[in-house]
Amino acid sequence: MEKLLFSGASGFLGHNVMPILSKLYDITTIGITEHDNIKANIAMEVPSLPKKYDVILHAAGKAHIYPKNQEEIQSFYDVNYEGTVNLCKALEKAGLPKSFIFISTLDVYGLAVGEDIDETYPKNPTTHYAISKLKAEEFLVDWAEEKGIILGILRPPLMTGPNPPGNLKAMIKGIQKGYYVNISGGHTRKSLMMIQDIAHLVPKIENVGGIYNVCDNRHPSYNELGVCISKQLGMSHNPLSIPYWMAWCMAKVGDIVGVLPIDSHRLEQLTKSNTYSNEKAKKALGWEPLDVIDNFKIK
Image 1 (cartoon, one colour):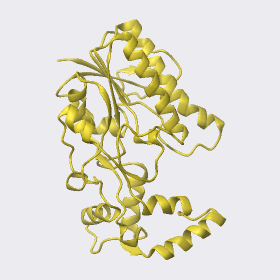
Image 2 (cartoon, rainbow, N blue to C red):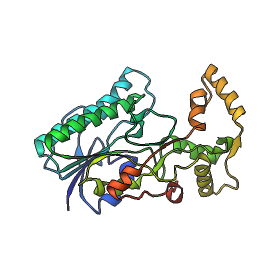
Image 3 (cartoon, rainbow, N blue to C red):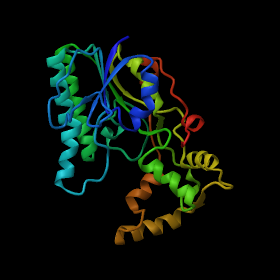
Image 4 (cartoon, helix red, strand yellow):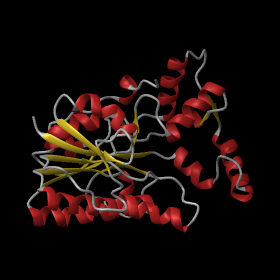
């Protein structure tokens, strides 16, 4: 059984993929929690690794929150970029792996609107989260080529799974409390991905490498996702929908007062589709993604 070093195993991703990966690999986790096998803050130090590993799954990172000050901005680069560099320095000392798999993000393209975007599209990250992830990608491409390591980079969208954090958590709560509404029927589509698919991709990419957009085939609409959640909550009705003109008026007020949950930028995101092509990953890796609507369980 191959030895796999897993950074970021204590988070939402790790909790969902560990049960699958542990059947395929001898896993050692590295991170800052008491549950990690190797306790190290790779954002601040080059960790000491006890042995050489065959495969590295590097998922540790600072997620895309809105930074409030310069210290929070810098933390994106410390965790997402410097943490990657420090991990690679540790591997050079302990012994180089056969392959290195990096969990990046579709945000490196910098798009809020667009359909069927593939890997040839120019990268133009617009947030510190995405910029730091792209910097890590670029470093890894050069490092892996120099060291003769198979590099796989996966760029997922928002990932779904039991008890999700962030926007999906807020959507579930909004539907449950009755204040979530769609706009113009909620027909806007967004690329999503079942989080378990990361585990399915690891053994497929470790011997092949490459850079891939990864998401499901359906690209669910807000309405499809809302209906899926409502059914699981036992709701007697699906989320309501408001007309575009009403949302537009609310957005204009939000632009001025800045306290509403919607403004003109958010309105564009909610009413224009943003989807990505997974064809390269499907063809090169022989991967067929799970359908989000068929497989998403909120608990």
